[in-house]
Image (cartoon, rainbow, N blue to C red; front, side, top):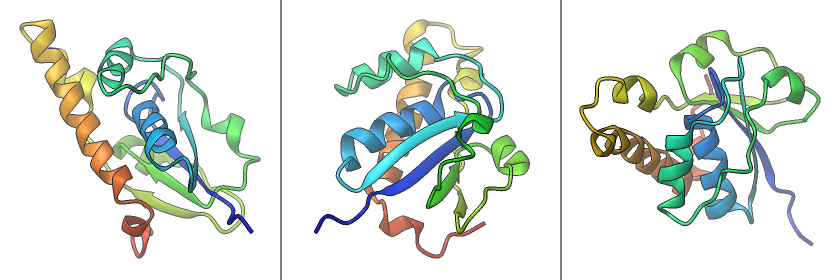
Length: 148
């Protein structure tokens, strides 16, 4: 009998970068045990630099859409993981027995704003992508005992 997959929502402010990368990485790396979703407190559209650095790893997130958390409130999530401080501070209350965890990652667009070249800007996206990948690779074990 197949065990049900964990339904995990990766929540960020605008659902354009970090939460989108987390959704794509979780689907690619842990799709056998995780049913990943991503959303934002607001919607800012999909960040093209996030799409670019994800494609470098063979993961295509170009078809993902920026979603508002209000559109997903009917889903019975096992975990809501906030990937930025603003989302952690403004996270809505979810019905049911959802565990909320904060795993904050730096904001690549903010870090890349003053980059002197595209390569320097993309370095910020790559570093955060790799940090999120490490977090995802250690799931679900790293979720235990980290409730906010």
